[in-house]
Image 1 (cartoon, helix red, strand yellow):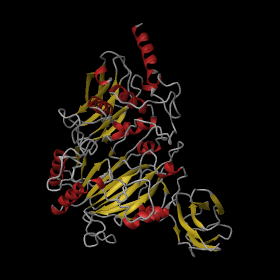
Image 2 (cartoon, one colour):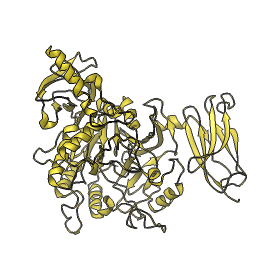
Image 3 (cartoon, rainbow, N blue to C red):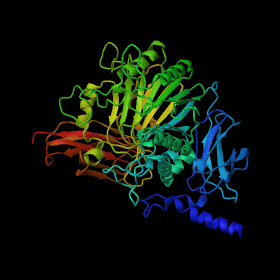
Image 4 (tube, rainbow, N blue to C red):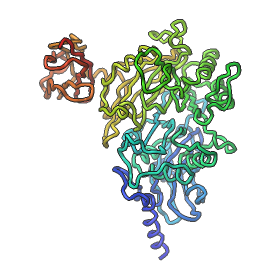
Length: 613
């Protein structure tokens, strides 16, 4: 009888996760199969011998939760186990710092309640030891994941990969408000903006009704950082409350139990990578920089911690994660008025507003001959790849053609879902739309290697001893999709400190490990469109490696199809032979167009300018 009553309780409490919502939006549900652990499992902050594992049990009182870690997915070869009591004090979340593990090893973990109900099985991976010769690592990068702004396809694609060692989330993991221009998935009744600890706990629980977020947390260890939407700063009580909720719901090893506001910390991955995250949200303007009178962005204690970490790093690569764009983004060369920036820089709230802080950090790296630095940044919802130079417009200090003078690189991988230019302007995202604005920006920022203002997704850094390869992976956010695309691949070679980019393209990736630029480029060849600009007709040559269906279309910059040039069926294009393709433009108005080519396993485009009408 007691067991029957218990299962009735579980059935009722499994509904409480959505009881306050009359209607949940599409693709939102609790993991009722694994009730009372319907919010999933997670892991994070891996060390060579330890990792945090997490879950939450839907319960009352102070239940006992059992946990185990195994070598196999069937959970037969158990290597560590134990139990813990949880309670309302931590909102019934469970965090275990599992120790005694082997380095750089994949483990599986699971939780169980007193009635024998089990959670989903999670997968995690420890870090290599500091003296291990590590040949290769893959780090996925995420930021700005508004659950109200779209579907978490990017999380789903990350979860499907078997080659990711770590997911770094750079903040705005949750959102405290619904943007009025991005109401893609909003429950009823309309969500409140959380302020208190209880309200932030509820927002974390709501997020974990998304199966794609649960999946990526279940499959890969996280290394997470907060930003402004994750916490509430209007008063000290609610700030501490929102911070405590963040620590409760993410698998974070709190770096200082006596300083709840501290989240800056580091991880080491053998002799290949040291990764540090710093917090500029809570430490800006706390101190001034000696001799300059300028406010510090990091604060004295955090800055001293950071340069000590950098000075003692012996790894091949150093990744520095933070919430804001690090490199300079100048707009003082533009004569047109802009709805953002201060007329000099695009975002004075980023590192551009604290030039002395950025200069002293870069100067420290240069003077101490610390190479192979990669800054990863969030917040701006755009894609940016830039060389890091103290004065990027000073040709004596930095050469944009060769990269000489650069001290490192920056990689910003866009937002998971939060809006950027297309949402702000209400237009369809297309690869060539507003290229002229991008070109204008690049003219005044010679250190920027890549800029993209429409797409959403995640980044991937593939670190090797001789180079690091960066991938921008983009996913649709307005509907559920099964694939993502790689639009750009860049490489920074060890000791060179600057990006080298491949051709701009977007390529479907049917296999998770198909991320080699050489493999992508070898699939097809397209010559430049000539003449361009044109008034009547232009031509290009297309070569495909295998017989396949190919479509060729002309779009305007808003994504409207203006002309279907050819839809070539298999057999019409002989493999490895250049085929001449004509584009008739006599019926097109003057302006910028995109010629988009889609084949089987590749997709690319070129801009075409029509004049003379």
